[in-house]
Length: 224
Image 1: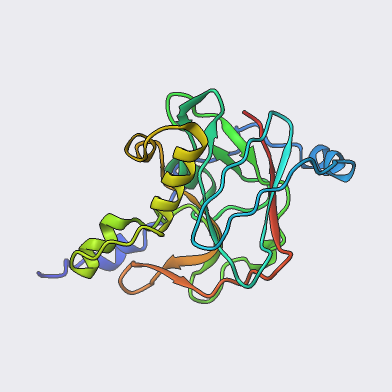
Image 2: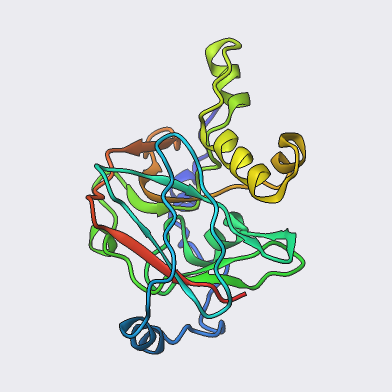
């Protein structure tokens, strides 16, 4: 392949943000902070290692995802309580807010609903920013680990304590669906606490040790 004579000038063209968000309704973070200051904890759900768990949050309630041991990370799925067809849309969230989300960013639902399902109102890892490798935390670029990709990369070996299988089992248990039925509703995730990015030379998805420590959290109020 021959490099064209104007290659440098083509690469030098300035980028344009595809989805400017200035016209979106901005969340009232001060209102949320005031509400959180007097909030009362009403329930707690613990996800065991290599497993998933479900919880319900009503409109106006807060939920907090907290690391309780070591540098833990987790995959988050969100569904509307009355219609599982409305679910978290990581791709559109990524297009609107970037590859990693933090305080003030909203988690959008799937088309044709396309509305904020939740808003990140506080993030104890907001300080991390973007590191020298291009890594950051709370990504919406990873799809979730799954047994199908694992089998393709390992030569056929199946592993069912990956994120996709864990989420499928948890949803099936919560709803009474079969595993095959529940699997169709499991979707691309918010990788909570996970530190990821893309390599600069090959553009490949990478992960690195998460900066999360016990007690770190990211809370969001359920808006849908």
